[in-house]
Length: 286
Image (cartoon, rainbow, N blue to C red; front, side):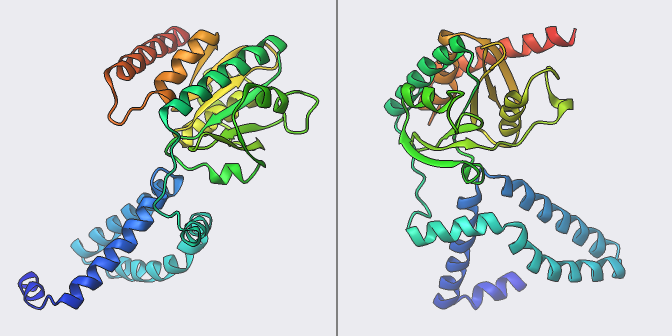
């Protein structure tokens, strides 16, 4: 009955009002999509829904009172919890780039892969430690802000210079943004917990690479300062002991090929790499 009454009293002004509210929520969801804020917001909504369902179905007055007061507290807490996301939203709104997600074209991504592979091989030979992050769908602005702004094109010479032990920027991560440019150097990444490490003896660079890959869809290339070995962290797993050829193949599968929609070659390469990684994990457990 309430639905019929609402449809009968639906006016053009009400329709415009509904569309504006829907556009507002769509803008928020578009901006936070692929960030850590999504998981936090989903958890809050599920908690509220579960409490509301239990209190209404069992007529629990005290729990309902708690929920009503909790919503008032959340109205104050949410702006504090999501302060970084709200700030970026307002910044992008002021810049007119709210709905713009710059993505480097495939030819640029392939060039970046080649530059990274050339630099990685030379860094591995010299045993210079390195940490290179490739941003994908998940925003990495909170980590870019921890580093030194560079805003430069990717080149092997620049990467070699940044990660030279005699420079001020070598101790940290280089982050390459969606546009295919080096956004920052000497960035600080979150560390993975020891219990999730495939090999507890791995150093801080590998823990940082795994930590970022656990909280985002970024691809992280790591070069060990002690051994000169090249590794890739992606989706919370580490693919180690790579040479230049294998590094190039994996980066092409995860970053270089245009996968909208995912083509057959990228899918086959990804499935092969996942199979190799799963077999390696089973051998390590045994």
